[in-house]
Amino acid sequence: MTVPAKKPGHIWIVQILICLLADTTFAEPVPLLNLDEDPILLATLQRLDQGLRSAAPVRTSELLAHVAQTTSRSRQQVRAHLMDRLQALEDLRQQGGDDWDRLVDLGGELSRRQLSRFIDHLGQDLREILRSSDDYLLDTSLRWAARGARIPAQEALQFAHRIVATQLVDD
Image 1: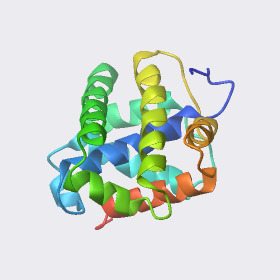
Image 2: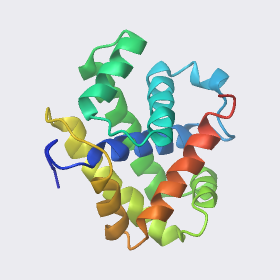
Image 3: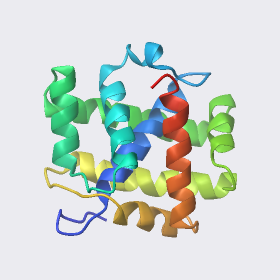
Image 4: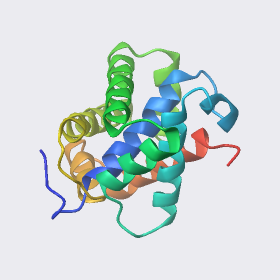
């Protein structure tokens, strides 16, 4: 379900999944010190934090440019790295375990099934976004993924806030 920049939406999918991916790598909440080992993820999380605090829309091209410039990597390297992290999230979702339980705990009122469906829908959109050279905006895709998972969009956004808070503990 790819929507060009004319329709808002997909950037939050990218950003939320990146936060989720960060959460799957470490057994404890991740302070900035540990994120220094993954500068692409750190730059993305910091940009997500700014985006969640602002009502201004953010484009995929802006996110990728910001992360590429901050990390001295090409946009293609950033895309490839995020695709690797996306695969790690999918593996975690399918295998379960302690890290999955921690992620479910951050889901608040969301059930395991809702959270799994939500991440699955986000993942599908993210794969399309990262493979595409089109530019995407925030908001609608998060709502579509939430709708597909049969959860209120507001709960999905609150989940994103909890993920960011967990990842940027020292920020």
